[in-house]
Length: 154
Image 1: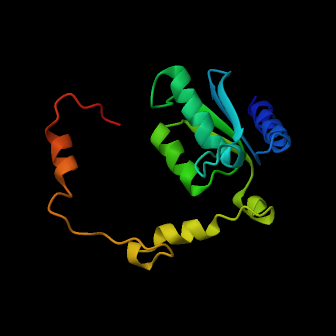
Image 2: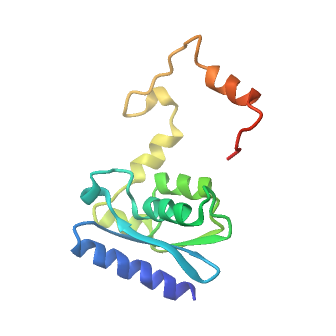
């Protein structure tokens, strides 16, 4: 069963190349049914966040009417990058199956190893300037959130 869905994600990645996208495909499955599927849409959509996994997660959430994908499994042609990994945890997927790993991706020109290194560094030591500014109003959104009685926790 897992191999079948994973082969579909690989086929989606191959088809995606022919359609001007990147070599990645992802499928969200629940109870043996495909809920959503997408190829990488970064270049066609001019959106650096439109990785196959992210787009498939977005589509699945819309279809199910929920921001959590509990009980769902993600099948993806390649090991998820750090951004996609974060989305996977936020979506609360129950499992992820992937074909190629990050080292295979790096050999094809998609090396995200530097991001893993950057995440581990303090903000001031990262390649891109990231500096916290001290503002009196900084905690206002969190204060409002704490007292909100009808909030939807996520």
